[in-house]
Length: 280
Image (cartoon, rainbow, N blue to C red; front, side, top):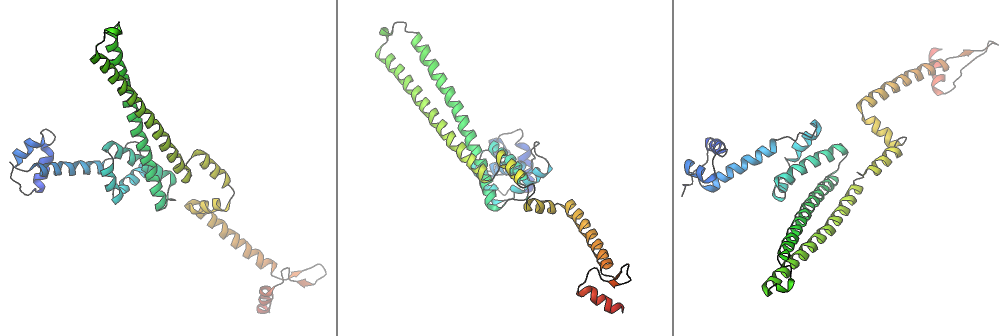
């Protein structure tokens, strides 16, 4: 039995390197470490590699979102709930959904997005189970047909043979019932998935409706102002309007001499009168 010693940084590097060509028992013997120690180092290295890898299908913004989610406690929980392939799927879809909604996502909506992806994963699991069930049904039916083909005269079958046929038939019916149950489960999952999409206003119909209804709305103007280019453009426009207004106010606030020689102020208010008193 390997003696349990402290695992140093050098030991970890050596174990990781040896794991590429050797099994855990051999590493334990060579490094004089326990199986738990060696397995822990290998598992930690796998987790680190998964955390640092990038998904090729994601753009730069989505890659950053994917990296950020891995820093949360929620991600640690997910690593215990999902398989490595399912984690990859979750990471990719989460980054894409979050990028779609941009910065307009609250914590409750993040939870909805997480549930949405989990429903998708459950639907995939269900579809895989249905496929496996269909293959099992086909296998059992083939076994039953091959067995019956050996008895052109069914009356020649013994009691054991009849029981075997009945057993196969029972297995076939059980597999079909399981497949039907999974079909019903899939429909329920799909309904919940669609309901969450509608709550997030993420269906195409809702997105098109939202875009069309907000074209001339106050909210659309606010959204435009939030864009830096639009804010700068509107700022310059407002400054020009202010300067023009002041210049025109000065002109109309000065005395105007009419054809009969009389003078008057086109705009008569407290400011123009005060300006005339100061000039006098």
